[in-house]
Structures are given as C-alpha cells and as structure tokens.
Amino acid sequence: MTLLNYFINNPSTIFRLILEHLQLTGTAILASIIIGVPLGIAITRFTRLANPILAVANVFQTIPSIAFFGILIPFLGIGQKTAILVLFLYALLPIVKNTYTGIKEVSPFMIDAGRGMGMTNFQILYMVELPQSLSVIMAGVRIATVINIGTTTIAAYIGAGGLGELIFTGIQMYRNEMILAGAIPAALLAILADQVLGYVEDRLTPEGIRKKKS
Amino acid sequence: MISFKNVTKRFGDFVAVDNLTVNFNSGENIVLIGPSGCGKTTTLRMINRLIEPTEGVISINETDISQIDPVELRRNMGYVIQQIALFPHMNIAENIGLVPYLKKWPEAKRKERIEELLEFVGMSPSQFYYRYPNELSGGQQQRIGVARALAADPEIILMDEPFGALDPITRITLQDELLEMQDKLGKTIIFVTHDMDEALKLADKIVIMKDGKILQYDSPENLLRNPAHGFVEEFIGRDRLLKRPEFINVKDIMIKEPVTILPERTLTQALEKMRQRKVDSLIVVNSSGKLIGLTTANDVLENYDKAEKVSEIMKEEVYFVTEDANVSQVLSIMAQKQVGNVPVIGEKNKLVGLITRASLVNVLGEHLTA
Image (cartoon, rainbow over all chains, first blue to last red; front, top):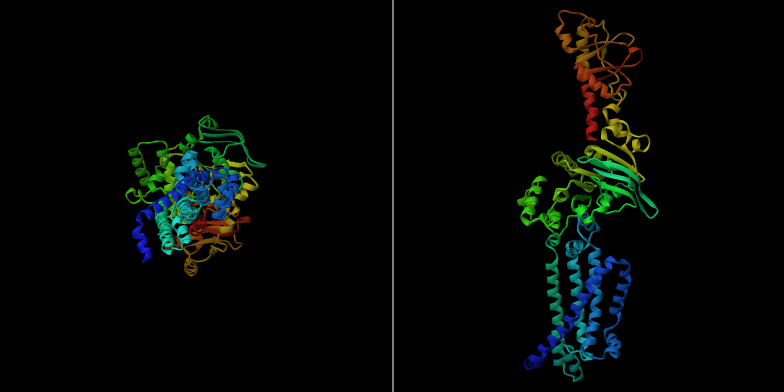
C-alpha cells in the first residue's frame, strides 16, 4: 500500500519524470529517424558503403550502455546531452538496417518496371521503394524505441532525468515503493510504445500488401 | 521504324550484342528469339535505354534515341515484363494509370482512359477498378500489365517474355488477345521469347539471334520454308519443320496396304470386299500390282444390273501422287479435283499406298495440337 500512497502523494513528480523520459527517448529516436532513414536509403544506392556503415552502427549497439555513457562523459560531461547522443547512436542500427533491408527487399523487377515506364530515380524511391518498405522501416523504429525506453532508465544515472531517477534514488534510500514507482511506469511505457508502434506499422503496410496476409 | 546501325553492347569482355544492323517496320509484331545469352533481351532493353549501347546508333523514326531524354522516351513506349511487376501497393486503376499520371494527365482523362483499357482487356471496370494486384490471377495480372503498357497510347510496345510465367492455357489465351489487339491497334511490338511456337504464332517477322548476332530475320513462313542451314534449322526444330504440310512426306503417312481388287472380279465380289474391309472404295490393280483404276460403292450399286465385272465400271482417270510427294501436293489435288482418295504409286506405276481424307486429318490434327 505504500506504493499506492507514493503514487497518490507524488503525482506531479511521476508525471514530470514520465514526460522527461519520453522527451529523452523521443528526441533521440526522432534524430535517429532523420539521420538513419536517409542514411539507410543512401547505402542502398552506394552499396559499397553498406557493410562498413552497418558494421559501425553495429559496434555502437554492442557497447554496454553504462560503458557508453562512461566513455562519453569525459568529453561531454554528464546530463541530457550525453544521454541523448548515446540513445541516438543506439537507435541508429535498427533504423538504418531496416531501411536498408526494407528497400533492398523490393523486387528488382518492380524497379525495372518503374524505370521502364519512365519514372525518375526519385519517383522510383517514393512511389515504389518507400511504400513497399515502410512497414519494415517502421519495425526498426519500434525496436529502437522499445530498446531506448529501457536505456533511458539508465541515463538517469548520469543525471539526465527520467523515470530512472526514482529507481536509482529508491535503491540508495532503500525505498522499494520509490523503485517501483519508477520501474512500473517505465515498463508500461515500453509495452505501450511497442503496442502503439506495432499498430502504426500495420497501418503503414499498404492495403494491397496487407490483404495478402489475411 | 526502329533502326539499329552497327550497334554493339559489351559487358566487360562479354559481347552481348555484336555489330547489329537491322530495321524494324512500324506496325509489325517483331519477335526476337534465341537461346539464353543470345542478346535478345539486351537488344530489347536498348530500345528504351534501360541499357545503353557501347557503340552504334539506334533511332526511332530517324531520331537518334541517345538524343532523347530517357525518361521521356520511356513514357512514350509501353513496357511489359515476364515478372509482370504490378505495384502491389497500388490498386488496379493506379497501376494502369501510372504513365498517364507521370505525364500529368488531368484526373478525369486518366479515369476515362483506365476504364476504357479495362474494358479493352475484358475486365469490367466496376469489378476491378479498386482491386489490388494480389487479388487477381496471373493471367488477369498480365492483362493489367498489358493495359498499363497501352495506357498513354504509345506507338511502340516492348514485351520481354510477357507470357513466360503463365500456365499454358492462360498463355494461349493471352497470345490470342495480343493478336486481336494488334489487329485493332496496329502497334509496333518488339517481343522477346524463347518459345518457338509463340514466335511462329505471333510474329510478323522473326529475328533469330545467337551470340549477339542475327542469324535470320524473316517472316515465319519463310523461316519454316527456307531456314538457314545449321543452327536456325536446329533451333526451329526438325519436328516443327516436318509438321508443316510441305515437309510431310506422303510415304510417311500413307495407308500402306490399301484394299485393292483385280479388274476381272465381279461386282458382287467387289461389294463383299468393301463390306468385309469396311471401306467405300477399292483401288483396281492388275495382277502385277500396277494401278489401273478406282471404284466406289456408289459406282458398284448404280451399275449392279448393267455390268458384271469391275473393269467395266472402274474410273480409269485416277489422280495419284508418287511416293516422294508431300502432303501439300496431295491437299491441292484433293481440293482441285474434288477427290477424297489419292493413291500413291512407286516404281513402274505400282500401287504402294493410299492417302484418304481421314488419314490427312489425323496428321494435320497432330500438328495443330502439338
């Protein structure tokens, strides 16, 4: 019951931290989409760059998050800036990779047909390739978001704020209700994001392709 | 007219098309055929600049196409491929209307054209306009593929094995529809296939290619009548050559032991023989086997009271052919002389066989169903 009391007594703190959490994750994901999708498209055009770029993105994701923060603190200090950069780099791999794979999976015959009918390169991209790979790209965004909601929790450790703050403070003060007041909303956020983005992914699958599945 | 002048295409060391010079007439259905790697698809794809020639000039109606913007060029040319490649995220109307859309036709004009084309390929607009490609059968999809190529009413349509992925029955239906379409619209069609039957059926002119070169460029009739020796003959297939009436030897299809009778037999004996052997005519030969006449059941019955022996009633004017004649000659005799049975004679006018209407139908029927 102490947990419930905590929620009742501190609604504005929890609400503020949820917003902060979403803001951190959201900013990083948005930046990842803005950089990652064009980058993913670019490496389908310059395929020689595909492997090196995917390898680098892969390295970012392999580094444990707490170590990654540690590496960047000497350069950027603690706080939101460092946190967002790490979160951004984490999100890059799934987004770049899914963009690349999604577009590569479009049948070359579709592209041949488009070109043969007189589409320009840009028209082939936005009329043929992107509509057919949108759901795959969106799946990458979903994975990145869910991972980042988790990683953002750790970012509180370097003073970036978010729901992790309650968890870490709770651990230091031996207050379980405080830990849970951070952990439960964080978990729910991740689950909710997964559901919502899964729905978006589905809606973005073009009707003619979606029908095949049923 | 599409003309190739000394056109060569190399991919690295590989010569795909080797110094090609040829003209394709407007309004004709030109079929490019040959084994894989012969350069037929490369030739096709150079016409809409999906592939650029290494050397040489391709021109359409005297205009060098390398001087035309490839996007413009392609929008004014139909393009149909084996994989059909309708866009799965666009409905049927959007697929058909794609080139008009790219050409910025106003919406009302596009809609009208799409409906017209759906009617043209035999698919009701009310039923199919808003459907998606994956709801259609392969044959329906390729009908839409053809409609899409016709959308902006291009003069030239390029087709790269368009019916190759369809089942045989659908393929034949679409071939027939293409011929019908060609009769109505008179487009210039450049059609690539590796199926000789398809080529013979559809082509006004056939281009047989091998190793990037044209071995023969001719009408289907001439190709069958005078195939260039060696590869062309082999590629067309002895089988197919043999099935043409002028290539079928009488010796191979004649009835080898026709029912005969000696002239000195009586009419009763003749009738009895016909009844036993279930035929309505007899070939009259003398004792040494020489053809001397022909008699039919009718002749025998009409003269039953008046005559006694076969020799009295037989027709002595018999149209016959020799063993080395071909079926085409037999056909013309049957047509001109209004006869149903043509005896075949060998050395010293000896009877060796008989061709009847029925035996011909069998052979030619095989040709049609093969």
